[in-house]
Length: 341
Image (cartoon, rainbow, N blue to C red; front, top):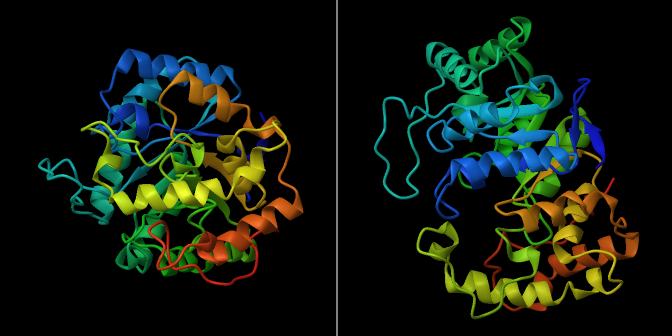
């Protein structure tokens, strides 16, 4: 495993992190808490020291799982969590409908204290404001409170987590340029490069660390899907349009050159694509079994993408992988300078 720095802090995070979402929510199948704790501990044994959760993951379960897994070695792991959704007073949720957010000082302080209790710790290494829309980015007091958390020793680094259609490009750029955040979490992968490319440019200008979630485009870049792939009823990917699957499989076929040497899998190459950008401190692949853990944790030790491979991926992306019509994955393909530093 290799490690990178979080912004201007002295915090070192593993290039491959562990997003606790997959083992604490029902979006990827049934949750087995004992198995989840075991998987988290095995990740640590593989050199993964960065674990990302949120107070809403399993209504707090993601945080308690981390406490169960690492209560006796808190100082050996880096934990990030996210706050901002008021699931305490809004318990009902229909499908993927978004919960109400609350950015008031009273609520943010309350939410952090609740997270600290569930994590069984007195500090969070990296606290993010969850899916921040522009009203939050423009809230001066909110970021003053975030700074106060640092002075109080409850938070070591602060930032924002972005979600598609829930606060995205402009919110991310303003957070980096105007709010002096230490880090920012975003979606970015070989199939979904925008608006990540613009956010990478802003991160380069502001010395902000980026954390990439969905680096495999919801599993597409693991290379295991075909046109007949189906998903379980409790798997969120079941609700995606069939065009997403059919188009994605065709795009992935164009990336076969990444595995021709036999020195890396497609899933590992997808992580190396993200890590080719120095502003990206860590990736958060969706890990829900030991086979994935083994594969992804080994990715940093596989060969880096060559300049030719990186450029070829970007050329494919800029031309929508030679497919006609609008892409079903990510935003509109457009010619743009490479994100690589």
